[in-house]
Length: 312
Ligand code: NDP
Picture 1 (cartoon, protein in one colour):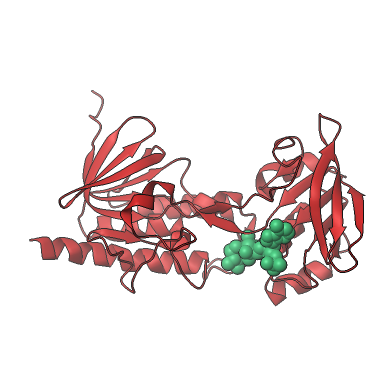
Picture 2 (cartoon, rainbow, N blue to C red):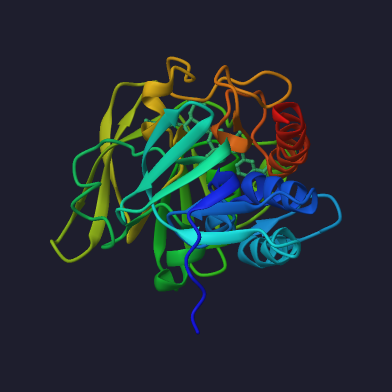
């Protein structure tokens, strides 16, 4: 006999990245019924991350491997996982009603927003057209298609530098185009990258267009922000790492977002709506790391438990 699908929970967590999974672990271990809802596989941005070297206890671990270990831990006390893209959240007294693109409505007394962020688009001509034909936002997913090729990476933060390094195991050369005259990435990553013969950093340079032969990318058009000169560079692929934007569209009407769309919380991970919490990258916060996401999750799990206690 198949198990009947459950739609009512104590706690629903939107997003099963490190923050959401940790909340699920803590809340389910406190005997609450917990559902993680995600639009894809558990792990969130861990699935787009190659090597992680700054998560305590794991000197070096691949993002998808860490995701699996976190998932096993998060579900060991009964937390469930379901697939669905959340489209709407409505309040009905204490109850939060969550509707997904599958036409399903779930309800819970506590809602934890852990929907994270997604990569920003560069917004130049050719970016959309050559998506899947050489333009990528995920080195782990697409890097292996570029053996022996020349790749352009756009951006100067941790992602651009670290994912650029990852790409050197496939590509012959990786040119990182940085719009300013310096990188924003952590010094340790910069030092490592600058010692890699396959990595090249080109500063003061913006990409203004991505061009190809209809089938695949062949070059990028560039603009030098110091000299004002326009130019171009041959490229077999373009990996874009220019920052992140929050995934908060379904929560826009709840009055809990700042002017850039990040969720505003207090020190207890609580939003101003009773019973709605937020954790991880989706929060308006100073640092977005796996370690901080996990910390947020632990705190929220505990706070959700207290919220239920106070309802009694
Ligand atoms: P960041 O926001 O840190 O960096 C974005 C980079 O892209 C900056 O160099 C920025 O330039 C550049 N940029 C933005 N817009 C454009 C544009 N239109 N054209 C060209 N360049 C542009 O994003 P990341 O994805 O690197 O990192 C996101 C967060 O995740 C950060 O907090 C980061 O520390 C964290 N992270 C941590 C890792 C780790 O600790 N191992 C690994 C990966 C990410 P400018 O400086 O001029 O604004």
